[in-house]
Amino acid sequence: MTSVTSIRIYEHKHLGGHRITEHHHPYYQLLFVLEGEGKIRLDGVAHELSIHDTALIAPYCPHSVLSDSKLTLLVVAFERDALDPEIVDGLMREVFADSLVIKMNSFTGSEQRQLLRKMLFEQAAQESLLGRLSLKILLSQFLITLARSVTPVSSGSQAAYVHAPANPLRAEKVRKYLDTHYFEPLTAPDIASKLGISTRHVNNIFKEQYGLTPMQYLTRIRIQVAERLLAETDKSIISICFEVGYDSVSTFYRCFKAETNVSPNTYRKSSTHQET
Image 1 (tube, rainbow, N blue to C red):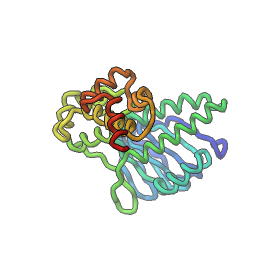
Image 2: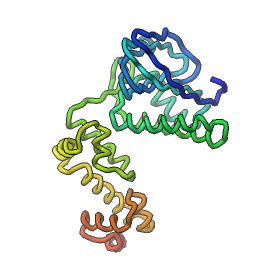
Image 3: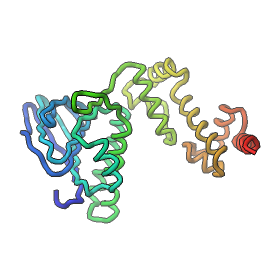
Image 4: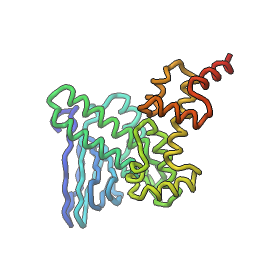
């Protein structure tokens, strides 16, 4: 590390039988598995590594990495001072106080890959103020997404994170993703590709669990948020349309009326009248 506020991203390849002997360093590391499988030992506890898994290594934590086959890691090394103080207090000292391995689901793994791509792009521009600021913001977003998108379960003195492939859990992961990404331009193939299964299969497992297809659920969530904004704020309809993920006002009107049987204007007037 070149300075106390630096962030560095680099690739680390492990060939079959390659081992990084136990060591430690005075800064944080994030190890994101791009491909392959291996093991990492953190504070004497061994953890399996596979694609999309992320290991967060706290400063001075003894650790080693071993792989019997090809293992490619993307490493993000950073100092605590590279982060906003609120991130340090709220995440690094609370959620990430100890080193751990996080088993990523396909949705979070895909999102993290995109953030890492952006970080690599901005790293090339670190000589500029905008490049350095962008890199810090993206790192913070990576850590927030990491903390928000996984479910911890007790495993001895370590926090472990699991992803089960059962259909109900797949459906639940889709639902949680839609609950927090409804404002994005999502399509049925987008959702299916994140799970690595067909659109038809995603529709079947989701409908079995929730009685709706993912796209029908997405529309319902968007309209529910729009209803709240219409009733509780004075935001314009075009602003609400934009906020809940629609690019076309006519599409928003059509979807809103299909869900509520009234137009957004009528809904707002009715809500205001009920309050008075």
